[in-house]
Image 1 (tube, rainbow, N blue to C red):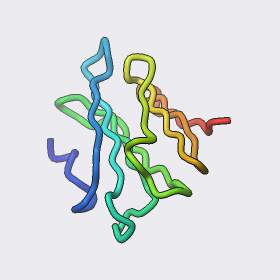
Image 2: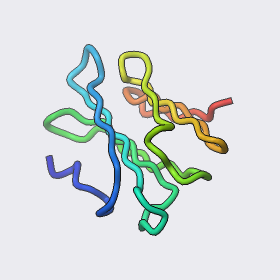
Image 3: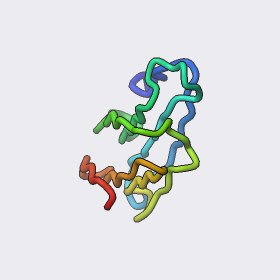
Length: 99
């Protein structure tokens, strides 16, 4: 799957299958503060044949994988840090600010 190539050399990522579908979600963030994509999370939704959505989400705090949670059969990505909070509904490609 060439569309899943890394956007930076030193990144972390989390892959989860979306229950009851053939889709997967990947959340990718930088490992160090000197990355080209500092303070940006990439969220991709795909199956084994094609990429459906990619979201580039700017954060205030340096992104950390420990701030990522999944809900609703892994179809919802929840990100919460000290200054950032969002909910991404992967199957709808909908980003919501957390209140």
